Image 1: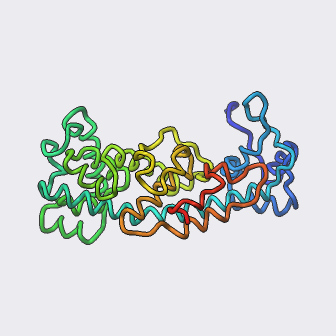
Image 2 (image 1 turned 180 degrees about the horizontal axis):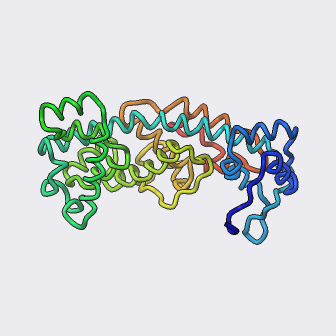
Image 3 (image 1 turned 135 degrees about the vertical axis):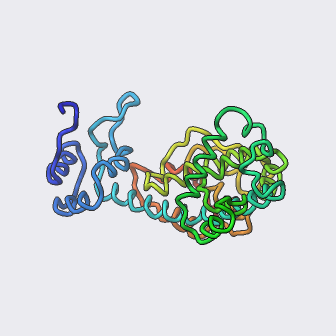
Length: 300
């Protein structure tokens, strides 16, 4: 196939980086790096080191580009993803508990009855697609409580149990399908209005998926900004308001939701952010964090 890129050995990959202006250091060490981390994956981290001309990235690297700096960013990003994923866990559990309880009060199987849900569940085919996805998740589950419901109740899970087999995306869609009275109850438990909370769930689903699939996180740019409360009403959010399309802004939402759900903001997350490597060509500002980011009560 003539339109497929040519295969290159590890040594040839190193030679290509050198020709384009990267200081690879010791060649054997560089080859060892590429054996551990795919060239294509690392290319996402050296993209910001490529020169610019008229707003377009060149193949050649900017002067001073070093492979060791690329690897340092890659390793930082790996630590960040792991910590963010762990930091999101108690938020996800709190949302499951709150949404399952509020919907269960309406009916044990409210999630399976669109006439009990909001307008969005009764219009178009979005709900039917969501339900098929949920049923696949439940069918794949081997949790003891799921097996119990299969034996005792024919497999029908009440909503407070069903939420426990839903991933973040399925959970976020269920919140969107919920009637306004349920949305308001759940959102208020986190100190937010329901349109704000819904936008946060959608935004953080992207963050969570990036962590789960080992995607680059530290300098990611997000296409949509989550809705924020009015300035001055929520301590710690104002400093991040202008960076909601960047990783720092998104992670500030994580810190806020941890606090709102009864957990302290993650000290580990603050600590990992503080380990950003000293790389002149790709400074810490690429995370979206301002110089005084640690002055926020959510990041202290």
